[in-house]
Length: 259
Ligand code: DGL
Image (cartoon, rainbow, N blue to C red; front, top):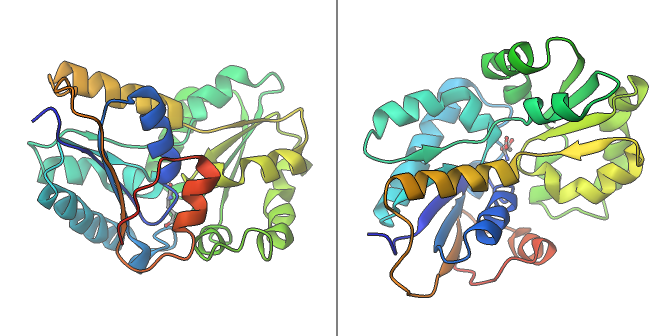
């Protein structure tokens, strides 16, 4: 069992930013990744739709014999991780949530930004995070559907430079000193975002914390790969992805692409 892969999924290629952190922290572990390219984006869908699509993805990963599941998507995690955990009680799940606590801990100005999808920005879960960890901060909460489809099309240099400054304008106007990337696609744009916001703004995500949590869950369940077998990596998508190879390269992820 311990040599079985960790199953990771997202609506598309964004969750690969989490895969990279898992591979860094747990280099002996095999990973199977599935991006639901056929149904991406999830960020402007209803909670019911997000839940139904996510359930199908967990079932797919189960068919691949995974030992645990990482929901590498804020939109899914904040909207329905509770329901998914209840539906798959024998499968350990780690989810992703915007790094509001981290931003609150680094912000000196007490003005922070959260950039996510619309479904995450409007979620009760995110409101709870803000209430719990950043109640003394001014929080600029922006949900957008402008970035994910462009990332999925691989439109790095053609379309993104036009939309990114507008998307980030509210954070500049509010002079935040910490920005949470509350969508796993957005760390793919970290350099471009940092360039626009300038060196005084900490650009934060939850990838490292998730990889740490995955390690803890594997350890406490006796599921770490102790077989000595070398890890294998598979990256699957539910439809052809124009961005997959490029994103793997961008992230410096070891490649074994299976479509
Ligand atoms: N990458 C996802 C997230 O973290 C969702 C992107 C989408 O499908 O809208 O929220």
